[in-house]
Every structure is written in C-alpha cells, then in structure tokens.
Length: 143
Image (cartoon, rainbow, N blue to C red; front, side, top):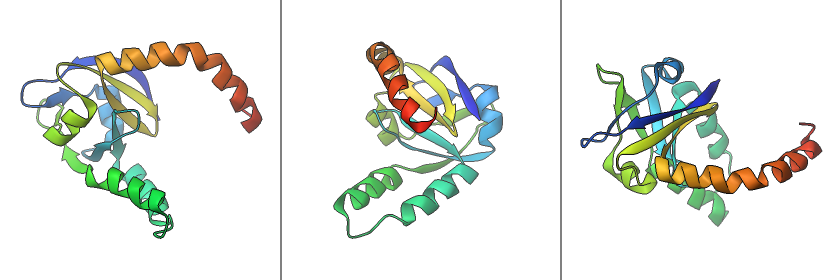
C-alpha cells in the first residue's frame, strides 16, 4: 500500500527522486502513465498487469472505452530507477502534468501519483471544501 505526501524537485533533465518508502514498493521496474486530474500515475508491475487485464475487458465498440484505453496506454512508459533512486520522466508526461520544478509525490493505495506542486495545492484546496460531502456519499458504500 502506498501512502504519504512528499515534496521534491524535478531537475532540468526530467529526473525526479521518489521517496524510498514508495520506491521500495514500486520494485525495480514500474509503469509511469498519464493519470486523471492532470497528474501522473505510477504503478508497480503487478498492479499494472491487473489494470491492463481489467481494461482489456472493456467493450471495443464503446467510444468512451476506446478513448480511455488510448489515453492511458499511449502515454505509458516502463521505467527503472537510476543509481540515485531517480526516475527519468519522459517529456510528453512532464508536459501533460505541467511538471517544471517543484513536484508533489503522493501515495494512493495501489499507486503513486506525481503532481506539479501548484496543481496539487489547487486540488487540495478545492477538495477540502467538499471532503465532508464526499464522505457522506461514501456512507452508501459501507465506508
């Protein structure tokens, strides 16, 4: 399980340190892809394989299913750590998530997310107001 919130800087070459607590659970090879809310999702290979299997079950004849799988898989990149424990984030993913200097790395259950610091702060501020309402909705799911 991934959890926690960490602030790190991305260097000019697109390399980002992922905290050891998260890095250890990602393994030596992992997948980095476009996420929702303009962040990046980072999956350990076993979680990626499970997600890949679920997405294969989506109906090919549904435009939304095709669009989502295209979006998700076309941005995906299999990655490894360098000797300093950094990941080199491909340019197209840096552009998508607007990663320039300060980044937030967060653990979210089965994945790690990478956000620009500005986008993360905006998301937290916007979500904080609705948090109680969201929690009330989750009661319907036996939360």
